[in-house]
Length: 252
Image (cartoon, rainbow, N blue to C red):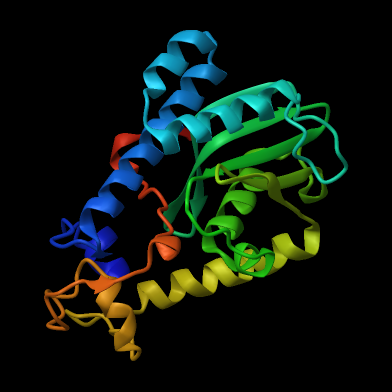
């Protein structure tokens, strides 16, 4: 139902996900600013004005400082300790055919070269997810799958995805890839697409776990309450919403 409202009906989100609203909005805005700073730095803007742009906010200043130490450390994020490949692009989108549709992934940082590719995703959430949950994320499946499909010269074994956490700068999670995972992801994604295409009702099925609705912005449209749930600050995992209409695609 949430997918239908957001991507099929393009319904604007009418409510906040959870309280406290001010804290969530602040962290979300800081996350956007952090991504923008990194993008500008990757494309050559000098550190000094970017540091001034980070301002005096304690959280953003700490994230930016942690990022700069990563950059000074020659981007050692890969599982084998090597630095990132030399060709680095920030905020780049790749689009590939997927059945009668297209599958799009927007990468915070894509580093390629020397027969390797590393996807880097910046996370500014308070709580660090565990490795198993990151492996299960649809983002992990889609990002690696799209890169293989868009770059035929890259075997799945030459691709890694690194989640870097601004709050935990020395604890990145690097996920390797291989042909077996690629085949499994393809089956999973096509099965998911089939489930989506099979929906014919005006209202797609709602989750049976109504506790999730407390933290869904569409809860009032589904008549499942109008008051946001209250989440502890350390559980406010801010993850940027991708606006696919606002990014440039690179189609292969």
